[in-house]
Image (tube, rainbow, N blue to C red; front, side):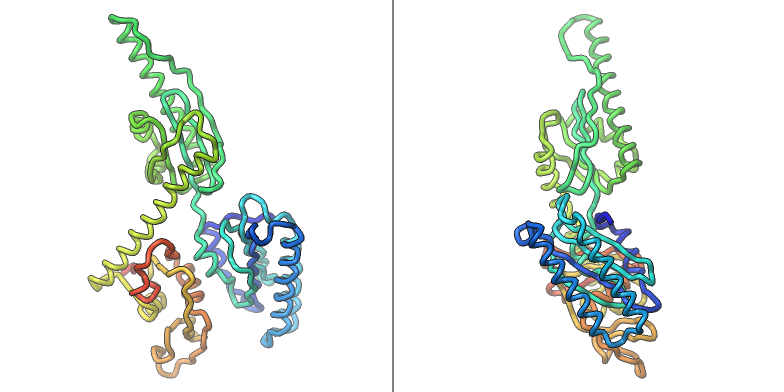
Amino acid sequence: MAAQTLTRGRLRRLADVHPDRGRVLSVFMNLDPSEFATPKARSSQITSVLTEAARRIEEAGDLEHDERVALKADVERVREVLSGDIAGNGTRALAVFACQPEDLLEVVALREPLASRVVLDDAPFVEPLVYAGAADRWCVVLCNRRVARLFAGPGDELEETDRIEDDVHSWHDQGGWSQARYQRGIDKEAQDHLLHTAKVTFELFKSRGFDRLLVGGPDETIVDFEAKLHPYLKERLVGRVSCDVENSTVDHVRSCAGERILEFARNREREALDRVAHGVGSGERGAAGLSQVLAAINEARVELLLVARGMTAEGFCDPATGLLYATADEMPEGTEAKPVPDIIEKALEKALEQSAEIIGIRHHDDLGPLGGIGAVLRF
């Protein structure tokens, strides 16, 4: 079964899985080439992880016989997945989610290493995926007055998809009225080339889809090109790259785009953190700290959830309602307090179920004084 790139939609679908009976097996496999470059090393790692999965199933005391049988079958399904070609195309880690009663077998490829682990729970363990971040799909268009090249894919895996070369005549001095007409003709040819490129870019968007767009080329040409983009593409335009249009290698385009992609990620985090700070400071539509954020999640008020990468915390859950609490003292009187070893995981699940956007903060330290977690509220 082929691994899929992590997307926000896939993350939300996983968070929606809650089997009525049985458990979900979540397996994370580290494929960092610095540790597991050879088939032998990966094979040993697979054996170790699946042995741990089998042990967890045997030791789980709250499983019915048929649930235990289903989980053992899930281990074999995961084994089959991991026995295939799992280390190609820049994959640095793999997440596999299996639950036979829900007909679930989801394989997600990640471009950053993470620790190998096994989790047996009543829902897919999505926390590592949230911190890894959903992969934005990018498009880069390099364009001058005659040639255009299109690249698409995750930022570090951009591939050239199209090269456009239109018949645009060169400038030369004829003089008089004929020169003016000639120049107008050349300009018309160049504008037609830019319109052609904009149409091809939109066709690429319709066929493959992408979340963000970068453009590059001579400034005066790019201004004209941007004006010709479809409104859907203008919404996704986030910056420019500086690359030689006709001669840049794919690796060079990836490098140039990578700088802009990192800048975009930092700016996105900065904007989100500023929104939380403003909401908390003004007392409107902002929450900070575990207790406040969990209360907002319980009320389905979270629009944007920010979590410091790697944050974990203990907490409590009311099994009857599914509501989450930072401490038992916050729970209504008479409520059953079920300890939860990692309340952040449960908070992420509920936020995803409520279609909240989640950002694992990597590039800034603002969440430290706010308790490691903050939110922008819908109301």
